[in-house]
Figure (cartoon, rainbow, N blue to C red):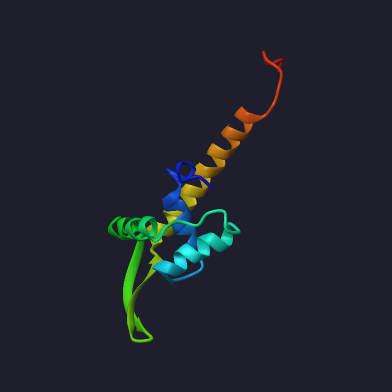
Length: 112
């Protein structure tokens, strides 16, 4: 999928990847790739800055841990993040409905 198609939807996608519970940054990327059957495989250079931005906005919270001798940061949704995810889903449904209607083949001028 082209990166341009994701503009404006990245936050919602990342929030959805965290809905099931905390994940470290790379696991967020993997969850999104798995959920889309490989159609969306974001570069880490896109994921981490977006996670940091979502954390600054209070939509996710991060915490450090040590796994296998390496530090890694895990993220989870906040209450505000869960509410934002609900809003992102509603906005997506409205957008998808409008685009589907616009792309549907139909005679012009409309007869009804």
